Length: 356
Image (tube, rainbow, N blue to C red):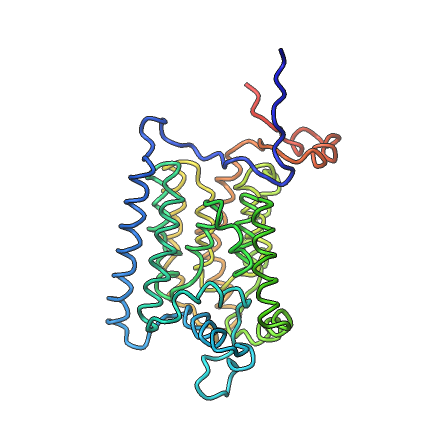
């Protein structure tokens, strides 16, 4: 008797085709959980040491969502109170309101401890997600992008974790630019529904928050431009040739989204390696060009900024593009997309499954 195979929901993507170790040598969930706790606790402790050595660091970039969360709990609108020139404000609140909701659990802590806790939770979740395919993926924690995200207590570790752990996909609404990269890597209906629910809750709290947020974004001092406008950054669009793969989609999404000129957002590119060797290559090339970051300044002249961005692209985007191209354009797609691409040339169409 012929058994019908259950169809995968149209938007769901299969697990990324990373090359795991042999099943018998993959870390168990208990070992992964232990490693995640160790990484999270270690990162938290290191951040407290970092703050002690750099007085005034406080919660870093996380201080903005932290203050917004406190204002939200007090029944106030963060976009009204957090603007330049207002006494006691932390400056313009440049994030979507869902970031304030994410920060609510940390609102009772001091800035330094809130930053340490946020980084610890983010890094622990990331470590747990990474190790599903083997310990080698922890090389992402040794990248310059992770170090930069750590130094300013920023969001990329948590957003990368949201791409790897099914229950966290809704976090894309808190940081939409790199959240879109996470969603492109593994699109899920649950991520869309969760993000919509969070956005609607925020609308109930502050009905005008999307318009107020967009108004504040216009006051951003550090330039955020799509990577394809960076020198050599356009190479990321070669991911279109591997549109069936999670890595190809993530690379294209990253290339199209505006990201910080300070390259902590580039941590999302460590979703791309499928093996220890590939992760090592990407980490090595990123460190080769990392010294260019030392020259970064938000007020830098445009030619100098372009040189810095070009160096960063050569160390991250270009190697990531090469890694994506090394693998065949193989992976599932919704049936309506299969019908659309049916007449495409074989090299562009790819295949739903690997042919022996």
